[in-house]
Length: 149
Ligand SMILES: [Zn+2]
Image 1 (cartoon, protein in one colour):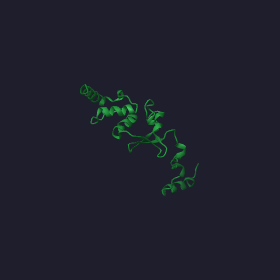
Image 2: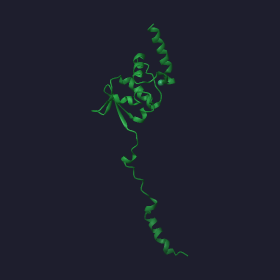
Image 3: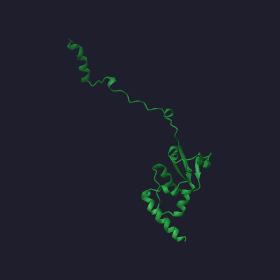
């Protein structure tokens, strides 16, 4: 039979707010950066002076394209450690978003010919234009074809 004296110190400890260390463990320490290293890396893409940043894995989702393949190494600048493209940065935004979302959008205010040229340069086929933009693209394409007849 346990005596009252045996549990009394615990009752007193509770009264002053003392909490055993074991019930209040420290959070797990963060994993050091060098141990968390994956095979991914951030790439810097300079398009006519406008800088874009993305993950290499993002680009390699589409290995048949210029940015997704080793072809991009032709555009790597050793001095600045970035890829440089002397292309239209406004349209490039849509191209980069394609890698991120899997959807290619057609900016209606852009000239269809210049848009097509940028897609061709980066090795992207217009078939991947999303449903949200495909009709606009197709209509513009038809208009252009009629105008050029
Ligand atoms: Zn769209």
